Length: 274
Length: 116
Image 1: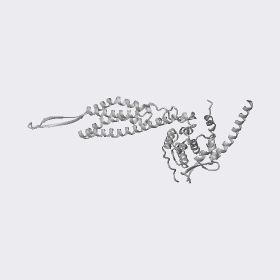
Image 2 (image 1 turned 90 degrees about the horizontal axis):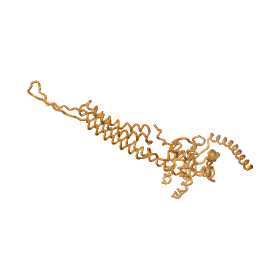
Image 3 (image 1 turned 180 degrees about the vertical axis):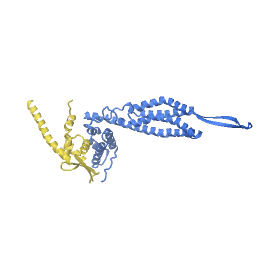
Image 4 (image 1 turned 135 degrees about the vertical axis):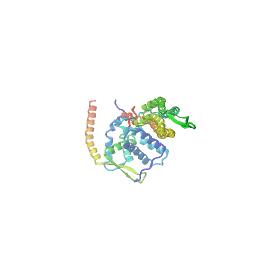
C-alpha cells in the first residue's frame, strides 16, 4: 500500500511541529498517531484545492488550533506535562557554561600535572676498580606523579564544584548523563597523573611520554567528544523546551483544566529519566 | 466553577462524542476527514476538525475501532476507520445508558421549568 505524501507547506510543517511539541509526554505511539492523523487530514483536504497559501490557511482554520487538538489529547490524563515557563536550569546558557568549565578543568589539570611532574637527569663520574679509567653515568628519573595527582585534584576542585552544581540542578540531562559529566574532571586528573607513572613503571622514561600523550588523547578526544555530545543534546532539549513554552503561551479561549495540565507548572519529562 | 459558553458545550460533549463517532462507523467504514466533516456540520458536537484525531487514537487504543489503508481516486491514500465487535458492544451499552440519562435530564429540566 502506498503511503500518503508528506505535506511540505511551511505553514503545515509549523502547525504539525507545534502540535508534536504540545503532545510531548503522551505515549509515543499515540502521539505519532494523532500527528499523522492530522497530517493525513490536511493532505486530504488540500488535495481538493489548488494548494495556495490561502487554501492552506483555510484548511488549518478548519482543523483548529494545535493547542485545541493537544487539549483533547491530554483530556483526562494525569501525566506530568511540560511547563510553559522555561526555568533557568533548562536554558541554553547552562550546557554552554558546563562545556566551558569542563574545558577549563582539562586545561588546569594538564598544566598542573605537567608543571609538577618532571623528568630529571643526573650525571656522575664513576672510577673503575683499576683506578685508571672513569665512566660517566647518566641517570634519568621521573618523579612527581603522586604530587602531580594531588596538585591536579586540588586545582580541579573549584571547577569540579561549579560543574557539580550546574549539572546537578539542570533539567537537561538524565541521571546517567549527569554522572558522566560530573566524573569527567576527576577522570582527566587521574588519567594525567596516573598514565605517565604507569608508563614509567612499565617501559621507563619513554613510557612517561607515551602515558602523557595517551592521557591527553583520552581526555581531549574521548572526554571532549562526550562533553560535546551531551552539551549538544542539552542545547537541543532547551530549544524544544523554549518552543513548547512559546506554543503553550498561545492559550485558546476554550482552554480548561486539561489544557492547564498540558502546559501546567510541572517538570520536564526527561528529568526523571534514568 | 460553573462553565460557560464553549466550555459548557465541551463538558457536555465529553463522554458522548466518542460514541457519536462509533455510531457514524456503525454502518460503514469512514476516513478521518469524512467523520470530521460530519461531526462539525453544526458546530455542536465538535468545534474543530483536528480534535477528532486524539479521540480516534483513544478508540483505536481501546480496540473499539480498527484502521486500514485504501487507495483514493482523488488525492492521497486514506486511512479508514471501522467499528470492531468490541466497539459495537460498547456502542450498544452506551445507547441504553444514554436513553436513561437523557430521560432523567429531560425530566429534571421539565420539572424545574414547571416549578419556575
